[in-house]
Image: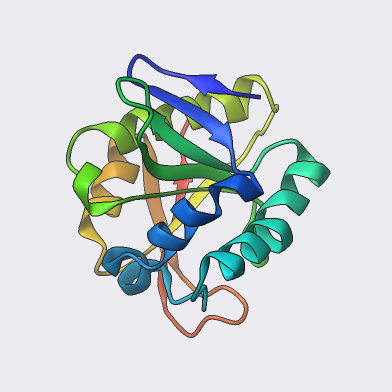
Length: 168
């Protein structure tokens, strides 16, 4: 399913997006706030898509979407709904290339993903996690209607994370 906003298209990630995923996963803020996924080549990115992104789409019908700006078809970021181990409910996540930050794209894409999650996919409980130092993500989550609940950890990650839930 392709989602659309006024300025953006959100398309499910495919192996053809490997070059973009390679760039995004190696951007400074991805590595700082999300972590090093050891995606060191476009081939690694293709495997990451095959092994980490596509299985959830096949299992649940939703997952990681590539955010594309309509005006020039530029791939600007990713936004999606994730079934993460160790979290209650489905988690929203987003990341954008540095050149496309602070333009309202993350809010626009995340708002559409939340709507699709509730209306199209029937998701009842939506959550989010972010690091304690990622103030822009915290601000965006609050703008989207999420409320901070507690500090938590997810399996295989040493970082303490801020856990949010979407209020109805």
